[in-house]
Length: 183
Image (cartoon, rainbow, N blue to C red):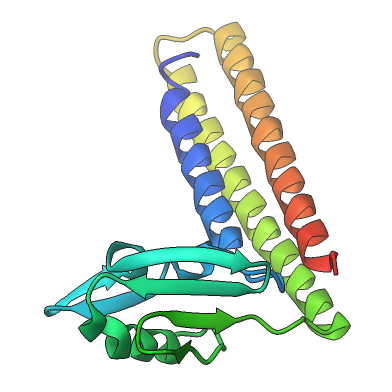
């Protein structure tokens, strides 16, 4: 990998990683502990991820169970979940909190797939913008010490890198869409 392309590859990788994390938080009718990733609990005045204040498990395909390490945190965890955009009301038995995910309707599944595809498109646009920035910086190099052939070669490598990331995003979107549509 040419050093001049490294920053653009890193930027594309960050875009891909962000999209992957973003798609993991979309609930697909199945309980996925990643839906809790963005939720923070007030833990002695510090916003803390749920995974750091209790044990998060998936005992059944549509249930997430949170066992706080301190019983006093149950109310704080419930409040954090209710004020989030998760759309699920937690229940507790004094020791653990359960989140029961309802079956998704066909209509809701289609909406989610549309949302996943839109986020995938946004990711691809970000990748293409990075390619454009890369091409612009390569054109600036052409005015200095680098030959046209070298610039052409670097542009080709940048295009191949772009194609690879876009293909990966397409694959990611397709897998998430399939997961959402699976009943």
